[in-house]
Length: 205
Length: 211
Image (tube, rainbow over all chains, first blue to last red; front, side, top):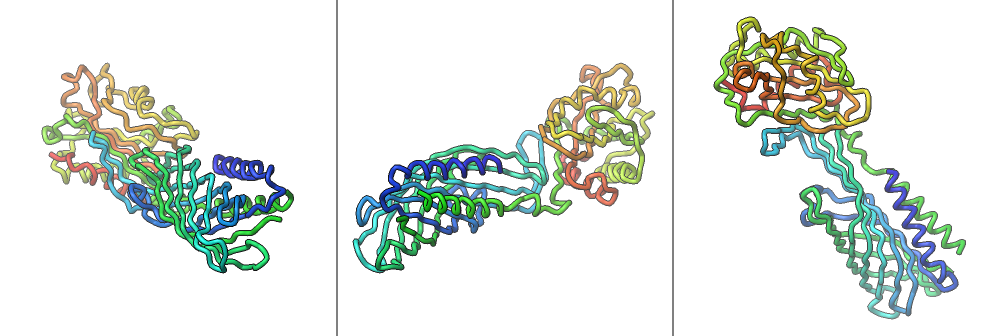
């Protein structure tokens, strides 16, 4: 938990510091709730979706359609498997209830592009790249083996912006994403997920 | 800038709130589910070549690598009784230790009060002081474990069952070699009501242990 708190604070400081120079322009604040579904070899570890996920970020509008910024997120994955016997092939057997617990905290540089300049409903595409702070833990019974590490992360996103005001860029944001994060540890090649998100974008005057 | 500060702080608070809702696996485990059963065996041993076995008449209590004494409470009696029953079901004959059994069971309750690392080789470094080989009719012999159970971080105790090869002690260089070890750890591992199930679990994953 201490390492997670450290990463949160680092992420917020980076967001606040990185955009301080542009405070005099209209920044946009984004806050999304997201659900992420493991895919690929990540499903060998956890198959259950992560329902407790959030992403927050700041974006600077370069023009009417393109904005760039930073985002910071959190996702919690957990799954418990019934008791089974695990053999190491060298004469050792362990009977245990196995529990897998992973938290991912992506810190990404992002870019979003609205496909049309005006309208109440505007489709958009987005991308991001950066770091993924990972807390990875596996329990055999009540005995665990926790690890924390940093990995590369990328995200591709599509969705729609639903404008809530004629006088500002306040909008609801609904979309889907694919999150790519190589891992290559403990038999898990990657921590890729499909994501669904819904949130709000608020301009900062 | 103040608006950015408030919103960023609010976002941090929201994310921290949800991060504190992280699913804690330990809160989702029953006492039975908390326990693990670990067995190791000598893959070169021919378990069907042994005919007789004996069991120590009490259980050693070892805390932080110090022998505190021997016990024979209800839990200890249940463990000894279950081992005896299961071994006889697998075709082995129970005999007294004075009759030179092929196999011998030592049983220990190992307790660690620290959060350090429990290392099986460390336990075996002092094995002779826990179980004097003279007891098994092999004065002057040493003990030898060809493998390590593993490295754990524990805050509770564990039930340790060691199966020794007495039949081939001389050919093993005057060593009482452990050819099978069973280890049960977790919540309520020393509860009498769990003794039979714990020993049973160790034996059920050791199908090679039969005459």
